[in-house]
Length: 413
Image (cartoon, rainbow, N blue to C red):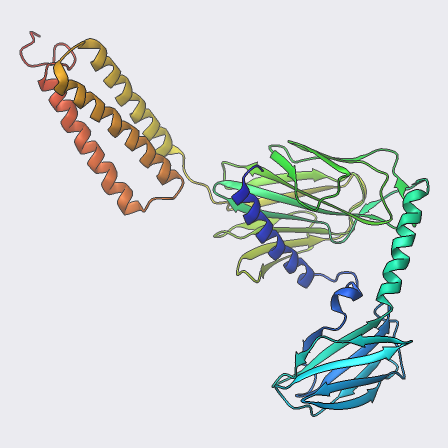
């Protein structure tokens, strides 16, 4: 995109939109390392109740019969996990700081400190074997990377989505692509994944964090293999200019798409529709921005999404054309006046210079109005002032005998 401010704004909005998507759709089980030791509010639990769940390496691999300690307000209480791996503590003092801990196979597990809420309860999870699981995963990835790739296919996973926002009069589009390889080895798809961006797309660029497998040109994305086991993230942004209230984006997908997910920042009465959608909703991000979110079922390789945006914010270009025409005529007239009267003294030169300055100010004022960076009242007042002064200057130039022949005082008709 080439604009630091625009990319920053895009990144912030993108993060908000991704948070929306996570809340709106059922996603894969969270990474255990991200939730280990954290306290999560649970309004469904009773007041002053905390449950501590103990698992090995992954959610669902419960550790039952495990003793758990909970220290709160300087006192330690113990409980034993049930078949679901949960130990429950009730009637805890509200507002006091607490910490949960357990020892599994000689490994000490300690939660982050938390406060017992004044209403509702908390759920805490302790995950054993994270270091062993990480080392094992690393070894598997190294072995897979060293092994020759196998023939196979990849798909665009359920976390793939298309997100859109507005920057001035331009629509900015983000492709967040999760490329899934379910094989244990690298996969050679036989040819790169080629995505020709929608007609009219401009200035495509890869975002930070995108896989180096992706190569981006102004209107095309090429993702070359072999693809590693697991997921490969590709993030691309591009501009989509438009000049009417309705815009249709068509995209053909070179691999199967597990789920269609499209979100667009809502401006005024903007609406989104697609034959591929089975539902659309308005969702509010934490920042307060509202997104129209459409979703639909899977598409096969070679399938196409057709997304139509209606009621887009469009500014009329008529004032722009009128302003440019007026400025051009005034400038041409000024040039003609200057050429027809070679020398009329210092006073005339000052008038001509002032006239050119006013014409430049008029053009700048019109540009600010089109960009919505000037108040309508201020715009109208300044424009009228410029017009009035231009009329005065042309009148003085005429009186000085530099107007068109046949209309100047003292010149025979």
